[in-house]
Length: 136
Ligand SMILES: [Zn+2]
Image 1 (cartoon, protein in one colour):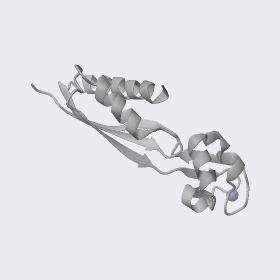
Image 2 (cartoon, rainbow, N blue to C red):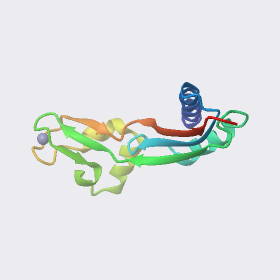
Image 3 (spheres, rainbow, N blue to C red):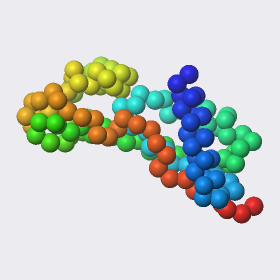
């Protein structure tokens, strides 16, 4: 499952980063989750709780921070978020969360009406911060 491989990747990178900083164990990992990523936070959390056993992250607390989607128009440089995108239809919002690629068929720049825009935020998943202890 997608969420499980993500959990594995998050765990691996956190441990790698912790080792780089000479930490003995991880206590907290902050993960930023893009609104358009379509990831089930609960499943990633569940995956992490299972995978972290017998690693230096065993006692770590994984915290998820939601990042709102932000778009930028290539035509007029205007930036806006999903709330300002005027999506009245809940089903539309749902399909965007599920398949972020369809965002271009539903959203246009609210200022100039151009469909040519970039998703500048809300697309990825990344580790924002790790905290740990460097002694036993
Ligand atoms: Zn525009």
